[in-house]
Image (cartoon, rainbow, N blue to C red; front, top):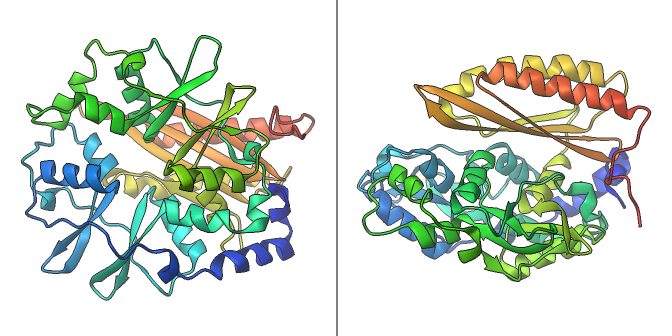
Length: 391
């Protein structure tokens, strides 16, 4: 089986049945950390560091209130370490043990979560993580036969051993990722740098706000002095099953993809979970927008209108299976935010990645979708570079 086999309704139904044969109770973690609304931000960050959880349930007298998110906290530059958790609570989808694995995967990708609470009434009974869903994928033979090059992101952001720590931090916050590859002058992967390493180096007792932490990354610190050596990597023609097993074995979320040691892409747990999500039974093309901040969610409908206009044009050439968009917001200048939108289009056994940056969310979405449409039209008579290679 390869990714294009997901176009076959019979094969897709078979794969969906294998995935959803797993129960939520079997994969959820019943021993998970929690915080209270009255806890301080500094306490929460310590819990996240010790537990390796990026979304922590907030409980008040045992009753679920929402979650506090690692990535959202890092975006609140004015947040003080003494701020109460009750001012940082976010809502995430309410899921139960009765939900199917494909439904949970869709909720996780749509909301760009790394962990999601499983509820029974107002009580949290467990947590499902990306790692748990990748564990499901690693045991399904059909998913394991998909090649890494079919899912990986290419081209990929990277940093050099001679770059500054601030370069890595800026990329992570822009792309909403926690790990990026480190390469030498020959583009050979020599390590990785993660937000965990940055925090371990930069975060000091005198850090009072998130903004203070960000300022410290501008200090004269090079990647060379802090990156993780001898990283776990995967070859571009390995199977996704191989990659999933490595992720679980080494407890990592991001794998640099190499060919002869040179960096050619990156594969994340998110990429694998997108495939699980795409297997959910639905009657029409799946379009997903994730990452929208509360202030921008009122624009979701307008974004869908722009997207649908271009999808209708694409449908005249190909019939796409799914389109995933993720929005990141950064560079608050005088009350204005800059938007970075990444997109991944699945169609005809191909996976195509795109990115667009701009100051207006709808205009940026429109420009991105026009680029996608143009490239799909061009592909009518060309081949997709690298992704069409087969051993």
